[in-house]
Image (cartoon, rainbow over all chains, first blue to last red; front, side, top):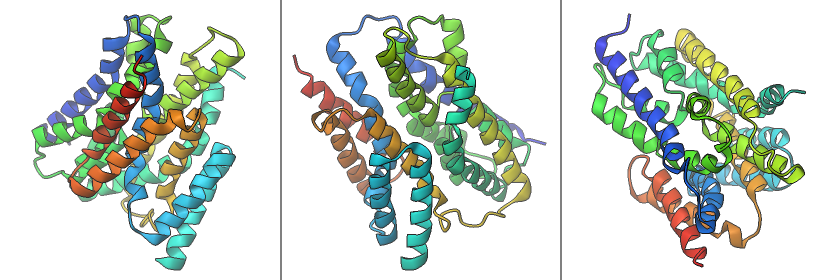
Length: 99
Length: 229
């Protein structure tokens, strides 16, 4: 059983999230974009991704920073799967050893 | 291999981080008093992990609807930018196909489909964005997210602390690998550094999820200024 408030809250989350997903497309979809706008759109994906993981860079936790450094090196020269495995292993190990 | 299957396969590294995160979210949800039926309903209709962790963290009985909707908007506001960056690639597709497909857009499927579109464009101009590849990645992520959050809700906290096992590092690793794929030059990465600096500063000084829109916005403004004609 699901109570009414839970249902309403889930529905409102779903609606808000879907609007954020279609909003950018609907606003820019039909327009002819200037070269400058295209340059900005080119930089935007990286800005979003790095903002999401920014807290890790300033965590102040030695184990996390070591794991992050190892992951940075792995990401700069290896494909996705080995990068992820090295990241998980180094984080697990560093936290185990340093705490 | 079809583009759809190529997408399914490409999603596998993402699942290393996604499956344990889904189990943890499911377990946290039931610990907060959300019924096991409501958990897959939330993760299946909302399908945006960051906002779901935030919502569950704020969950009370009954839940505070406006607070949770507001936090959801804040955490997911980055989708607006993501959708905008996809728009030029989706020109050739009719809206009735794009709008349902965008329901499945998450950080990973978006970034991977965008990277794939750029690679294809280099090989054969105007081939561009593959909707099948995007749907392949998205289907795998969606099915796993809903199934494993439901499983986590039913089994409770069996996995223990995923932080201890380092599994939470899978997502930053995916993001960093995707950033490397987008890398062009140090100059082109200046907006990223601005985003990183402002996001980190905001995270340290302001409570809540403001650091994501603040950082992204700072990076976009930097790119806008640098592209001054």
